[in-house]
Amino acid sequence: MTVETKRFQGARREWNSIASFFPCYSSEQSWEWGDYLKSFGWSVDRVLFISGGCVCGAASVAMRTKYGQFFCYTPRGPLAEYDDFEAVSGILENLKALYPKAVFIKINPDVKYEEKLFELISAAGFSKEESPDLFTETLEIPLELSEIELWNRIRPRVRSYMRKSQEILKIRTCGRDEFIPSFSEIYSGMSRLKKLCRISSDYFEKMSEALEPSGILKMRAAYHGDRMLAGIILLISNKTVLYKWGAASREEPEFRASYLLHWDTILWAKRNGYKYYDLGGVDLKENPGVTQFKKGFGGIEKQLIGEFDFSNRRVIHRIYSRLRDDLYRIRRFIN
Image 1 (cartoon, helix red, strand yellow):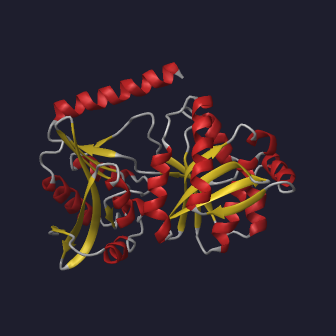
Image 2 (spheres, rainbow, N blue to C red):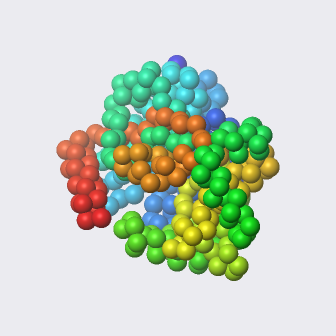
């Protein structure tokens, strides 16, 4: 099977139509996500993979030169029919050939782990990333279940929390101007308290500016009166709603606002026709508190194939990987 590469020259709507055709499509492969990355200094290359005159794959590739070195990353990509191993193999070979000077080409397809697929990616020269801050397990809630079935999957203790908070909290979908200032303030306070990596309000502002107008991003919050107690940022990908970011204020534990916020969002996603609510990465060893919180909703564990790197400049890549892992361990030690 011969796979050829064609750089995409069309417009936003056409790219999104092609990309969303693939079952493994994520909004991080959308045109809008590329625009968001550009606001932080990345450039974006959009590529189609052609076989027999038909598109068999696509990739929005983020590129950056830093400290004189060139890096490439396909967030939640490349897109392909991952049960067609011959096509996937051709796509990976073409992807490597496109960026021969890159320190690494990072891929992170949003597909389930399969041993044969893992072996195929490894045989193409891509090495599995084992950094401790990369999650390869996620929790999905199937929304084809009835509301009663969804409720019964939740742990009894969590249901008790939500019954109490329903009487005093209001949940709603918010616009950018209402949501971002309060959410950024809460996230900053939570980061200081829990010694997390701090993220500026500019990060969330640019994300919402790039993604909210097209409907890819939604923002929802729990309020006590006019005070936001908890907020979440969601990414929409075909029939899946992904919980991407969340923050809760110091007052939140008194009201258990985060539990009610997620439950209301599960119902919101179901009523809007989505098939899955993805609670995001879980890891009992590295992040036990968040993992136990997410497991309280009765989601189904999903093992992802994970993140892989390919490099023609292995010495520089090893130095980069070692420094990154050392910085992670130092941060964990300080915290």
